[in-house]
Length: 234
Length: 254
Image (cartoon, rainbow over all chains, first blue to last red; front, side, top):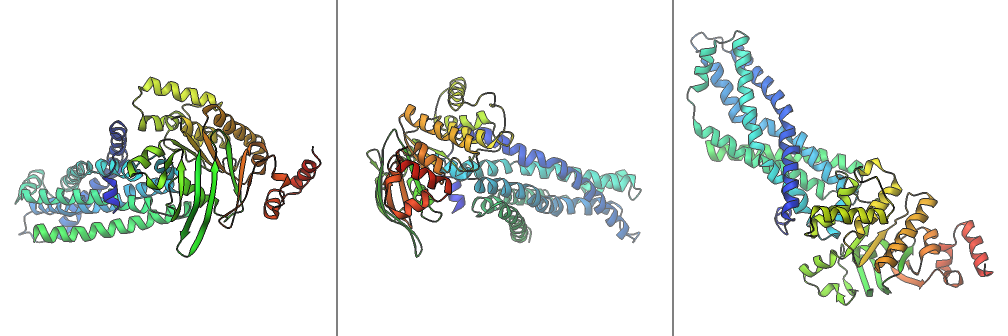
């Protein structure tokens, strides 16, 4: 129902353009710092843990890179970064829209004859369509972190790591990863917006709505992840 | 002019508005007063089209709201300005951007034309040198002025104000009252004010309606309110000791 209203009675193009650019900046660009930081170190940790668990000398060291690549591309970057983003971007969306509800700013939009859902939520959905770029950067930085920890930590030689990185590469895995990233981007834009837009009460309820939105966004992302994996990979 | 005929609104079993009929004339300040829970907010939200009444008609000029198509209703909303109790200014926008917002949404004027209009209304509400400040950087009284400026920048035919004086000191409240009255005269618009402020009743109450338990219990003006024999109105308006003395003075012809 909400989604239907988001795509009705569009806001004036010139205004919408400004809002979309602003949302791309707020939701995607401003998430880069934390995404790069987490991705680098998690990539490094995945490598160290894989290396320390490979005690059998018959298993090639290049497997460290292979395992790191698969973990990062298939699950860590698309899914776990999305859950972290449910906390960062999701809470921001719920609290900003919720505050507008509490302070009657949404009523002001509606009285002016503006479709508040289109004005507030549509630019966020478009802004989040740039989220796959964030995930692509996360994948790259994650693998960079894995390489740094593996090579500079003395677990694997550089050429073996690069060889492992290319072993048994299935390009469909990237299609799978980015397909689910698009789905998660849509969830990240709409579920928190729903909790913000339809909240009732005062500032305390804004906080509660942010928490509820984080929980439900995470739950929906995890269930969608399972369903998409079942459909595309099994 | 806004004409209301037999307006009814319920929420489930709770019948909030019970057949209100009245007329708010153009070029005058129309006040809605009444105790908390008397239905003032629901009434004003029905007038604004935020609530759909079950029965009755609201006519804006010669347009019957109920009979308008959704497109016409949206067109009508562009003729309505609203001053919210808390201002409802957009936090992320400066004063200038807030006031310019309705123009950006609904007019095809150039940026410089819009800016001229914004500066004109900001000067009208006596707010200068605040264009680039954010709502959080200005006082409550200034926020109300910005809210009034935003409400009238598109030259609406109807201006609604919900508790425009709440949270303001008496001096600033009087300034805001006078400003609303001046704008009502100058722009020749129909202004409807929902208020608890008795100063407003005596200052700008050209028409006053008193709501009690969802019904119109009394209507009149500031010049005759002290003569009413409606006990509920008298108790409400003259509840403080100060206003009891005012009433005595009014009755003595002062």
